[in-house]
Every structure is written in C-alpha cells, then in structure tokens.
Amino acid sequence: MKRKIDLIYPTDAEDAAINRGIALDADNPELTDQDFTHLRDAPMGKGRHQDDDGLSARSGV
Image (tube, rainbow, N blue to C red):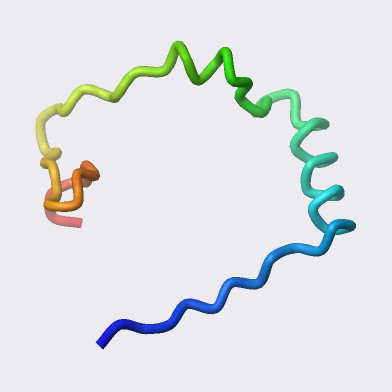
C-alpha cells in the first residue's frame, strides 16, 4: 500500500527568506540555466549500480 505524502509548501514570505539565504551563500551559489547546460551525468564507477528507476545508488546502502 502506498503512503500519501503530505507536502507543506512555504508561504510567500518563507520562500522569499529561503531565496535570500541562497543568494547570500557565496560557497554554494544557485545554478543558472547556463550552468545546467554544462552539467553531465556522473560516470558509473566501482560500487555503483543503476536501479530499475534509472537512478544510480551505492550498492549495499
């Protein structure tokens, strides 16, 4: 049986506070659309496998 997942979305004020925090974090800047065009899939290395859903995961975890 599948569980129903209840999502609580942030209010506009909370969302604005989250976005201000992201903008202030110089060590982890938000990726731009241009950044996403340069991203590539990570290579599948030793100890990793591809799950049925297409997502990679560590074996044994």
